[in-house]
Image (cartoon, rainbow, N blue to C red):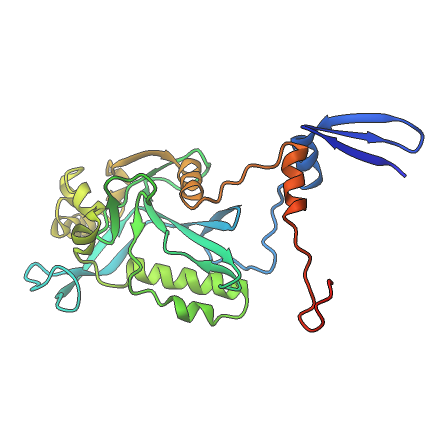
Amino acid sequence: MAKIEIDGADVQAVSPEGKTGSMPLDQFLAKINPRRLDAGEVIFPDGVKSVRSEGGVSIVVHETAPQVYNLKWIAQNSPAPFGGGTKYRSVRIALPYLVTLLVFRNGAAAQGLMLSEYNECFFRNAPLESWDDELLFPALLNCSKFTPPDGRPLSWICTQHLHYAALLKEPSPGRRLRAGFRALMHCLLETGFNYSSENHEGASWFGESCRVDPRVATIDAWQEATTKDPLFTLEVPWLKTDHSLAQIVERIFRNLGALQAAPVSSAALARHVFNYKPATNAGNGKKT
């Protein structure tokens, strides 16, 4: 039989006829376990552009085309800036391309994929075509700006009223993912837009963006501009993140500790073997 030996960062093979060969360990692992496009049993919602996974985290990249929305916006005479006493009014405004990053974590407690609390939202003035495309900050009240941003989302979607317990009732990962998507988009676009971000995280990206263009300086100006041209938002110089889609996704993975370097030595592989604990039969204590 052919034999394989891992020595440091190299893999050496010997055939039954005595032929030998070697290759770097990292290339060997990539060869036997290549990255594959396989969604398994999951049927993704319309608008999903791509998915990436690292460690126990999966990020679904969703894009919504430019359109006009009827939003529930805090009224000027609201007695409270947020919470139960907030007064709202209906506003009709256009949005550009809306890029939503849904962050799912895979854990035993959640019995598979489960929507996390680290989801983010961004604008774009053109559809996504590459992982190198830059994302722009969204001028929305319920997308928070953290100061400082280190270790935190760049544009966090407030999900205070999202019912995570209801998502756990979905039996399959595919249905749970779709339910998580619906719940998050409801929080983003259908619940009340108020000043919670200003009071809890320091600022919202709506407040930060009011000076980028007179047409979005106030919500009333935004409504007026929408009436004149529903596609005007594609011309607005929204605040730049200076990050590409790929960089922001990698940033999320890094913040959640999901970036795991592939083992590149025999010692690293050996640690996996030493840490392995065979499953036992709970009834008789025997290994299975």
